[in-house]
Length: 512
Ligand code: DHB
View 1 (cartoon, rainbow, N blue to C red):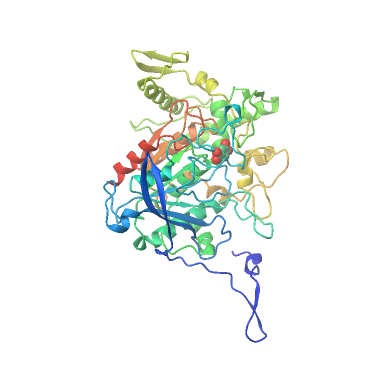
View 2: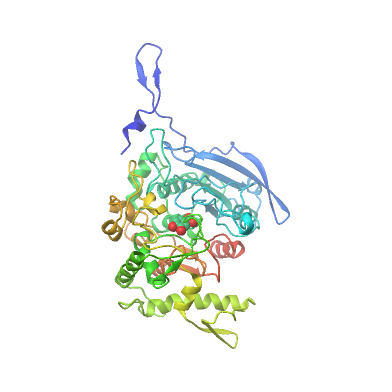
């Protein structure tokens, strides 16, 4: 599978005699070097924590791109002196594994210091808050508190963050190297490095918790769904990934933009009938004033919505009480009620924390309880953000079209619908590369170690994808016996890492 240009990319070396030898590309050691670190200090809530920073470790023997295929590992200094931190020791400390992937773009690993919360925006332009100021934190991250990395270190976790190639990554020859499934393969290779070196470094590589937001949340979900599955093996082998497993213990995913092959239909199931849209995210540009769908887009919306019930029903989902979750041909039914119940639970939590929800006429509140929510009115309050099809754009204009390109073709369709309705007659992606980027196809399948524990958050005001997507993911996992904690935090837009204390409480309760 190794492309020829890579084999010949090395320089010709001349030996002592006159015979030119083809230089071998440099092979990187996969052995963790415990002596190669820089002491650093992170400050969390006024407390200084000494750590050892092992930065920019190339995590595969034959990298394609050493800008991104690198790992930063941070370890509390105390673990080198036999200390116990938050009940953890050098042997038992969980390994927190955050990525900074956004918009299916390449990402460098996060750093313990100087990393504001959240991720850089996917298209490389910082989103602007009101009045041109940077929004909270940075990118689509959440609050202004300590970074997830620093907080994890303060709680005695070992932190490892890997970079990964992305949809625009190119090599020196101008070929694309980061199309699906490259980013996931890279993160898996980094997991293998950590498992391979488990004995050589503090932290328990059997307790890896991945964390990511949006496209990074999708990658976090994929790591959890696809552990050790052989589909990825040839690509890992090409990179010279460490000989080790790549399954993980737990997944933290904020607003995962995932299940891309069904996300267009899910979006129209939710937003059909909302015929104006307002782009907000850096992925979509801004049209703060809003705009109307064209008659063609309204037709496409109805066509896509009509595809959703068959997909949803094919999953044969059941609620925890055993009720079958289904939809009729018009998109109504127990699944819709089930999604609505998550939104009601979210409103209830907001109400319980003192939020005044009385302005929302579509909520029924009586005696301090949210007793009903008109889902269709709630969706109009949410507002539509994307035009149909939301992901496999008919003109190839979406980040996802670019994610499913090839070494030589930048953008492709990845659904049958958009391939057959294309306005640009573009090629369709290899179905296997679409499949390999959808956790739904792997959860609990033979030869796969799916993570046992999942924490998924998707804000109730996040319209980057349909609320059906996290609910389907969570329910499918639950139905297969995995432990899932899903909430749709009230009025949260597309963002992540906004409830870190609760996140780490959840991890602690799993690991202690
Ligand atoms: C992201 C957001 C999107 O709306 C999308 O389609 C893909 C990725 C992101 O924020 O990573």
